[in-house]
Length: 579
Ligand SMILES: Nc1ncnc2c1ncn2[C@@H]1O[C@H](COP(=O)(O)OP(=O)(O)OP(=O)(O)O)[C@@H](O)[C@H]1O
Ligand SMILES: O=P(O)(O)OC[C@H]1O[C@H](OP(=O)(O)OP(=O)(O)O)[C@H](O)[C@@H]1O
Ligand SMILES: O=C(O)c1cccnc1
Ligand SMILES: [Mg+2]
Image 1 (tube, rainbow, N blue to C red):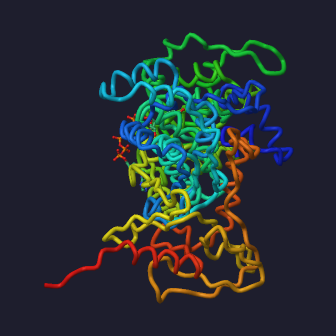
Image 2 (cartoon, helix red, strand yellow):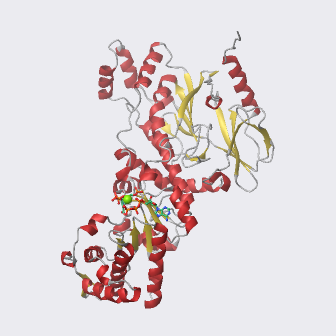
Image 3 (tube, protein in one colour):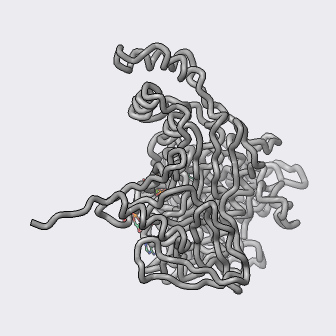
């Protein structure tokens, strides 16, 4: 496959020698990996993420806690979601790194305090502002599932413990950092599963995203979820994501005839001779029009001028958008002529992009044309020119294209990926589960909305085939399940649903990421998290990952936790009266 679609240059230390080869190619114009030689994560990725990026009620509650002498009450909150997005049965957890960076810089500045004084009622006591100003997350502890893990409803992604007002104040910011990140990472993972491992996926969503921060976050988390690159240059710089791209219709439309092409010559790559690129292209155009039975008059001369100009500007990485006028009668012919001319001068074109029409049909015609030329002129490389497809592509389009058969090497995907049109929000919530030694339960008429009280640990139990079988929540006091020993796993809400599970492997899901005012677990790079997403999904059974009617993954509680929770439920539920 042409290197336009080749593995990214930042792809892991495991990169093969062919990947290494691509690295040098990828530093060229179309795939500039603007890593600037650094692999460090930005500590301050987004200046908007600060303590005032919250809901007012967090601060009013903090005041009421403070006034009520509850500042040293020790609270435990769980951050979890209740339903997987996109009618799926799995979610990719993302946003942890940013939650931890937020904690690192958590501090109410003088100007924050001044603003709060103006926004809160004048009755709020001055000493509260002194308290806020001195507040830090030094007494907070965060347990979390590693970022990039596949996760499921009801299993807390984060357990946040510490002084009640402080952990309360983290709610909204943590939720905003996790919800969209996990939604996009999951969406991207779904596109990756639909496309398969061998197709390149590029994120093109910045122009359609929900604002600049949506666009930037989408680029980051789409890459984490399995995309290969982005067209978003700032995301490339900030997150070390390979940046890639082609050109727009405007570029083609801005040329009306060959007269508009001022860059007609090109230096031969090896001999250094200056050659008339336009003349060589025109020679190939007339040769190919006979061979392919396409009238050369029908090919747009403005489009040819645009392609020649672009090729002369980027002879080593020429890729052309071929659908401005007519893919078959104009774009494809013009592209092939320019690609062959470039070859005569020692350069290799990369491929084409198609942005309208029947993408299955057109990609097949394009590849057939490439193959014919490859055979006729004995240029095997012509067969491996890449076909990039874009235009409102969603997961279903890819699945349908797979069914129809197509010859697309790379999808460029914007709107549906970044706006998550199929489901625009993930419903993560942040619920109080314990204060001091008192477990808390939130009751609801909707049984699925009842919270699971108390401090809990989570484990993933694996079967003999290495695939995940079930997730299990236990009270923290309970010993971890042992591999090779059967364990009773119960449905959290339905008494009759329970099963003995014999795990071959038991994976504790939580690590302590934040303690005593510091990040206390080495944080993986974005590339490492991306690899973890791949691994984590690999350990999930195929039927759970399928797009249509997937099998639900089981999430369970231990027998102890089941009784604990249901006793508390009974204690807290009012007794009804019949009259
Ligand atoms: N073979 C295919 N199977 C299923 N969906 C396809 C196929 N080819 C293209 N699509 C999708 O069909 C839609 C076609 O979009 P639309 O109706 O706007 O046509 P268009 O080709 O973009 O038209 P225009 O020429 O006006 O730009 C896009 O969402 C595209 O991803
Ligand atoms: O279709 P998406 O998945 O959102 O991918 C991004 C789109 O952005 C560009 O189109 P542009 O903004 O030029 O408008 P167009 O749709 O009229 O080509 C590009 O050609 C893609 O079609
Ligand atoms: O580079 C591209 O082809 C591109 C970038 C953004 C949006 N659409 C296409
Ligand atoms: Mg479009």
